[in-house]
Structure formats: structure tokens, C-alpha cells
Length: 304
Image (tube, rainbow, N blue to C red; front, side, top):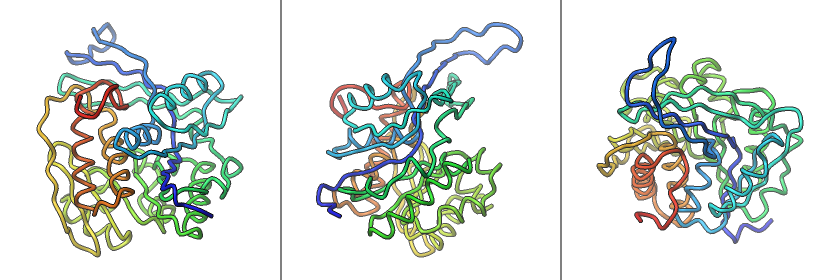
């Protein structure tokens, strides 16, 4: 199996996002004025698009979508420079998320996983690793039995092929429902774990991000905990080895900031960057992401 091309394969969720930005608090039982847009999203698909924007020439994404929006999502991914490997589901609609974004740019999600978590082991083949140098698994896959089995199978096949695997835990809320032990057991064998501070806290019970990062790095060779505007922590072998700052920006919408970090971090690692430099690339992409609406990169060159 050749991996000379250095491709990144992302296995994860492809989602239709409805982003509602409201400048005033939600008014129960009546109307609240908002700016509403329907956009392509999904943690896995977003990360893939940001990896492509960050210079990765060969990015592929495997996900399951409903027939209702499959063509639209394929076009959006190709436009972003990502090769879509989408499984069409005739029985379930494409996953959808309502993102409520308040005046501080903080987002709250209402999530209908739809077809995304129906990704089954039958949708996976070890042949998908041909030409792949890194495999990334969106943590959303771990929150339902069929897709969790698929993630575990992909992780096993990648390890057997010598392909390093990264996992983004994806959701502190869903982690709490699943349980930290179950998630950690399912993700065992991954080389890189990319939680945010809330997810790291959920996985360890440690309130301090530094302690959580250090503890997780005893389970995974490399752990990078994102801290939003405060940057990121890199931990290896039970201790924090680097602290990276994030550029100061005026946030518009925090949707997809973590996905942007993941995509840019993985692109940098594929290009040979060490963990700290890759984390710096991730922080810069995350900062760019919060200046646009939705979870995908803006059109035009980086920084344009």
C-alpha cells in the first residue's frame, strides 16, 4: 500500500447547518430577530475543508448523508478542494444542526444526527487507506453504536497499515452521555487526541486544562487541548510541552473554530511541522474561522 501522496482521510460527519445569529437574548414563546443562513457543515467535513485551505493537496472525507442533500454537499466539498467519498442513505435525512449564535459569538447547537451516525462497518474498506498518510476520526462517530464500530474498524486498519490516527472528541455534552471510559476505550490506539478544554475536563475530571492535558497524554502519545482565544496546550508523556497563543480577532461566529484548528494542525503535521508549530497553525486557522459565519473556510486565499 503506497502512501507517498501524503493524503489526509477524514472519516466523520457531513451536516447541513442552519446558523442563526441573534444580537439579543432569546425571547421565550415569541419572536427573536436573527440573521439566518443555511450552510454546509459537520465537524469532519469542516476539518477536511480547513486542511485543504491550509495547503494539504489531497484531502478526502468519508461520511454518510441522506439523498436529500447529497449533491449539494458533494459540490461544496469539491469547491473547497476536498474529495468527497459520501455514502448515500435512502432511509435517513442528512444530519442537520441549528447553531444559535449570540452577540458574543458563542454558539449553542441543536443536533439531529440523521444519516451521519448511521455510517456502518460496511461503508468502510481498508482500501480507502491507499495513498493515505494520516487518518482523522471525528468524535461524533463514537456516539452511536454503528458509527462507533466503523471508527474502531478504521482505527484498527490504519494501525495495521502504519497510518497514524487522530481523534477529535467533538462534544462535551455527548461525551457526558456516553461516558469518558467508553469513549477512551473506543479511541484507544489513536496517536493524537484533539479535545477542547471542556472535552478534556469531561474525559479526565480535571478542572485545570494543564492537568487534563498531561493526564490524557499518558493514554495518547500526543494531546493538544484547545483553549479558544487563549490558544492551545501541547502535552506528551504526561506533561505539557508547549503553550501556544492565538491571534487576537473580533469574533463573529465561533461555529467550527475547533474544526479549523484540527484541519490546519493536521495539514501542518503532514507537511512535517513539529507539534508546537502545528498547534500554532491550528490557532491561526481557528482565529480566522471565528471571523466568518459558519464552520467552513472563507473563499479566497488564507488571510485574504
